[in-house]
Length: 260
Image 1 (cartoon, one colour):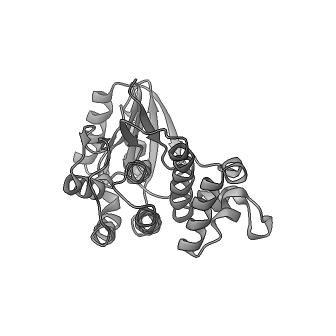
Image 2 (tube, helix red, strand yellow):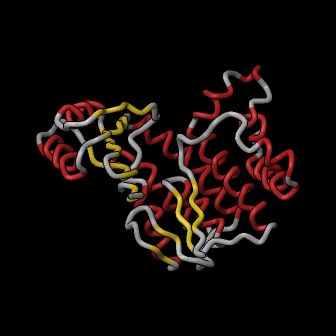
């Protein structure tokens, strides 16, 4: 039997995630506490919603700079439990942010290096969203080719930048870009459009500022050959090449996630 490990991306977070792992498994608790110490942030209080005096826990956890290290830590805490039980993958993949969790889970990144990178990635993406605001929308029930054509037409007409950002499933594509351009593109496609509550136009050229900063961070960490193939977001293909992995992680911020 072939085993694949899949890791979630931003938007899957919820207050309280990981609390049972923390309570029941020492190896998971060690991961959570290591993240707290490494980040010098009370991540556990934010994740578990333990202190309402700091504001709405859900809103706190939605902040990109908190969401990304929180989800990464949760994923790697769960991975620590599986490691202890001798469960190992034959292949791995992660959606957007989850790609870092996948890489750490199969030995391409150390837990600490991955944590450092995703924290800075979250900060950079939030900053990029402030420097050049944008938005995202999910389009349900439309052909991929029709969505792509609408994005290309709107961009060529000078309405702003818009492109496909996530190919999540057949009939579900997310687009990303300048707010007016996203609105124009959704109006041209037959399908149900759902605006997404995001702080920036992720996986689009509007993230160029974040890409430049991320390249500097990635240059400081060691990426090793993973224990098994990792299916990369940018290509949708498996890789065990550290140089390709590093390059694709930088490209990922500007490119569609080819999940399906």
